[in-house]
Length: 218
Image (cartoon, rainbow, N blue to C red):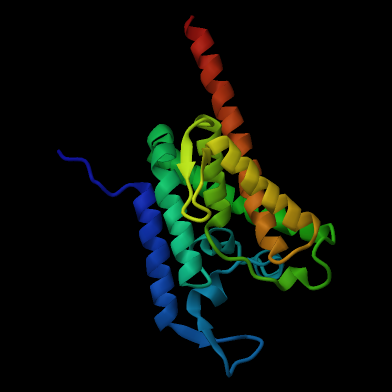
């Protein structure tokens, strides 16, 4: 029997696109201003501490990873997932890759909320909504850098080529700088960094288990 060509990476991309398209069509009134409409999945799928934890809408830990704020946000994230996802999925296998992806996304939301509790963002952070697959994708990106640190990556803008290790360090450095200076989208960058941290933890455990398994056969 021929294997299906639908990988987890492709399925995630398709789901994100469908969610975005449905959100463009299915609009609902905003809670804060009922005269203004917003995408259905943005209202009921975005993560915030207030909605997810205080109101116990725990599905938002997962759903926020499939909601995007605009076409540019969607395209950039899906391009990154298309680029980094297949290699990691091929190594982990579909089920473990899906679990890895979702757990990195959950970690991103929790880490951002943790920094909020540390009063990093100022008053009202509990209600600020987080959306996007970035935390999950940052986890996949760091897994790629972990496994293939010397692989080359060519950027469109700026048009430069660098190793995956260098690219990962730059991305982490930018996220950290934005968080420490409470810059624009500090909460989102905290989510990115949370995905990176979880990705590193999982990959370190994975590498440790592989080494122990190898030693047991020697």
